[in-house]
Image 1 (cartoon, rainbow over the protein chains, first blue to last red):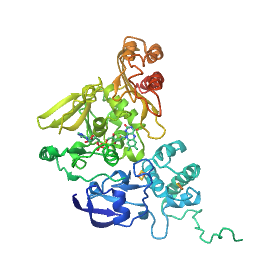
Image 2 (cartoon, rainbow over the protein chains, first blue to last red):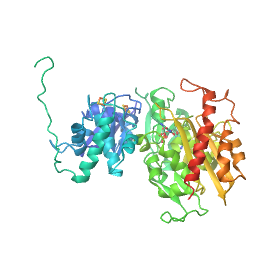
Image 3 (cartoon, rainbow over the protein chains, first blue to last red):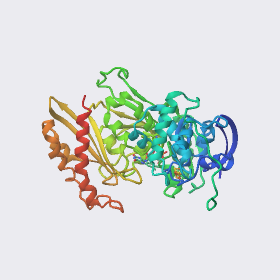
Image 4 (tube, rainbow over the protein chains, first blue to last red):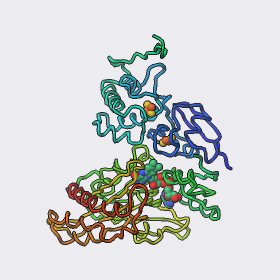
Amino acid sequence: MTTHDIELTVNETEVELTVDSRTLLVHALREDLDYTGPKVGCESSKCGACTVELDGDAVKSCTVLAVQADGASVRTVEGFADGDDLHPIQQQFSAEHGLQCGYCTPGMVTTTKHLLESNPDPTREEIRTALKGNICRCTGYQNVVNAVESAAAALAAGEGESAPDDVELQTDYPTPGED
Amino acid sequence: MFPPHFDYHRASSIDDALDVLERHRDDDPRILAGGHSLLPDLKNGRASPDVLVDIGEIDGLRGIESGVDVESDTDHGTGQTAIGALTTYADVLESDHLERHAPVLTDATRVLADLQIRNRGTVGGNLTAAEPGADLPAAALAADATIHVRGPDGERTIDAGEFLGADGSESALGERELVTEIRVPPSPTGGYAKKTHPASGYAMVGVAAVLEIDTETIADARVAATGVLEHAVRLTAVEDALVGERVDEAIETAAERAGETIDPADARSDDHASGEFRVHLLSTYAAQALERAMEVDA
Ligand SMILES: Cc1cc2nc3c(=O)[nH]c(=O)nc-3n(C[C@H](O)[C@H](O)[C@H](O)COP(=O)(O)OP(=O)(O)OC[C@H]3O[C@@H](n4cnc5c(N)ncnc54)[C@H](O)[C@@H]3O)c2cc1C
Ligand code: FES
Ligand code: FES
């Protein structure tokens, strides 16, 4: 067994760690570095839950060795929000109910960012094609596509500015069974 | 699913990669490029090398270059275009030059896997892994590509058909040989059509077609299929039926002959599709590929 000392820049913070040759990037992020945003769904490059940005490109981190990423920059979904202000893509996933359990969402959001950077005004068909590698077991995708459309509009209107339909996150949900 | 244990070396240059491969010649060394065939193979036990040689950081192996002016619209010269082995599918799709020079490659790459995989997988890896339903082997055959390799005995070039074992023989790539680039001659007319497997994304059947047209007549045709056999294969009956015919008349009758040269008993048969069904699909996708080839004829 061989180990390697590697350096990563994760969400703009430089980190050094020691990994086995065979450690997958997603496991290094989640288990060694506590970035649990990227999820492990299939561990076989099919579901997209583990999608992160590697040197600016959306990739499936279950199909990259951590040691292959030595020297690279990684952005996980934890790196999207600016303090308490969600990224416009995250805001729109929330506003459009583009998630239910949320397991696929970090990957969806990361792939969406990649899409909108190269194609700021995609058609619904283009959105579906871009998200082909992100599987969602809950939403039926309709609201996901809505969220990406709204995110494109929000980003076009001016990133960072609070959009008029800025999301109020509701946290005081009633307990089921109580009225 | 964890890969088994192995030693990992990151190569700093082609020479360094060849050195490491030579030094570890008894450890079943494997080259690692985009990793999107090799890592799945490691995880599920189809491969268990003791040493991986990562060529992913060798910058000289990445990029698309031509002897002609990439910026101009009139680049149908005689120069070949070279695609570095490490060029990703996303890089291929970004190249306007390649889309004009060899549109069959662009067309096949467009429907290959998904966005994340297209950011990572490489042209050289795709042709070397040459998985049965992979898209680029058919496109490379139709594009009349040559594969440039370097190994213990120096440099050589291999015709795509030999490299891919298109006649059913073993790939001509030798042990510890490294693919450096893929070269394609100009072929401004080309298209690819694929019956995508709904779960895996690979081609159940995929057909690539390149036509050379001389005043409404088909002067030359290269048509190849993936998914139907274990290796990509030329559809010679379609090619023969096209050459010498008028473009607007030939496609349908030629495409009907797509299954002629493949015995359904030899075709891949699995839970998803029988060999017979795969051969049956060939005509439909050959017709679509030829139609697409006509569309991009500028
Ligand atoms: C979920 C999923 C879906 C996919 N869908 C498709 C699809 O629809 N169509 C399709 O065509 N492909 C598909 N693929 C395969 C994908 O395109 C791979 O990227 C490709 O087959 C291999 O390229 P790679 O760069 O990832 O190579 P690697 O996995 O790194 O290497 C593959 C093999 O080639 C060898 N190799 C790589 N580069 C070189 C080189 N320069 N010289 C010598 N040997 C080399 C390696 O040693 C290894 O044996 C899919 C993969 C996954 C995981
Ligand atoms: S966990 Fe990586 S693609 Fe499913
Ligand atoms: S919201 Fe549950 S998997 Fe997508």
